[in-house]
Amino acid sequence: MKSIIKGLMVLSFLAYVIQSQNTCSGQANNLPDTLILKTKQVKGPGLMYYLSAIHDLHFKIKDSLKYDVILPDNINDVKLTYTTVDFDHQKGLSLKDNSVCFLKGIKGKDTILIVDENNNKDFRDDPIRPIEKIDFFSKESLIKCDYKIFNGKKYVTNSNWIAIGTWSEDGLWYLANQHYTASFKLKKSTYDIELFISDTRFWFTKPQIALIGGNGIKRDTVVEGEILNIGEYLKLKEGIFKFADLANDGSYITLVREDHYQDMTGTQIGVIAPDFKCHTTDGDSISSEDYKGSNVLLVNISSCYSVPASQVVYKDLAEKYGSKLDMVVIDRGEGLLKQLEKWNLAGKFVNAHTSDNASFAKNYRPDICSRTCFLIGADGRVIDKFEIFDWEKTLPKHFIQKN
Image: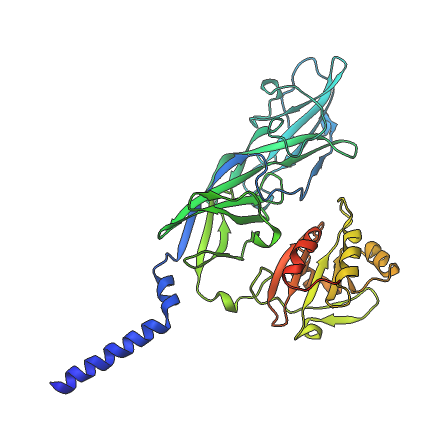
């Protein structure tokens, strides 16, 4: 009997030790494996808004449209165009059902615009609008448009808020101008998430999320390193969740619990940076192995419009940190990179648009107009991620500035 009691005591002690060694795992096991969050559409830009893409509309004579629409009376010189919806899931829908239409014409002496807001292919019941310069930040001028989209089970009617008007170039341009929010509770904590679709069209490709508040407190800014793409990880007090999926109509966000975050590879802060090998503009081959044991900054510049221009910002960055930090400068083309070479600035220069640099570009050139910087540490993990314009307030957190 004594040996049985002694054996039970030993087993109890071992159980206690195992439980103590796996405290974090035990806490994670009390969390749900999956969170499915209902989103709410909000008119206008949110904290994550940036002008990632604006789309031009090519108006043609009415007979060139590929399907029939009903036109209003007393509109002259009518020209029409459309934009396709839900491009990846349009099977089963005709082009007529899978598009939003726009009309441009002359009423009296004025050039006017009509958007088929209720998507019935009849312009007679939609407002006639003057053509004005597009306002990217105003909520007042936004137009709500209905469209059909596949939600994962069936086609449903959805709607977008869009800004439309003239821009710096000829013609008419539009972009979706809205964001989405979701809230949830874990144990005693509440969290608020913002969802932004960087594609800015009538579908939900390239979604991004960020934590914008919790426990009743809302933030007023979100920085680049806090914005997550699908496949990246949301760090919460109770545990870590992967941004796993978004419903095809944007209605639900799926988060999946992740218990092995430290082993993950990616470009968000804290994870192991993907290995790379690429060719520079002068024909050299460089790789992540070359920077093993030291810090390296991968810097994206772009010819996309910005004030100040990103290559000028890099000039200031290179003059400040060029002697103490290895830097690789990335663009989709060689024009700006050659300019930097002529300025005799520090760094290696990589054209991400060449076929031999495709795998490098997939990880480290997020989009055409990217100006994102990735600071990779000596241990191969991403230390920080920020817009090039923020280098002066970001890099001093990690380095001593020059005198």
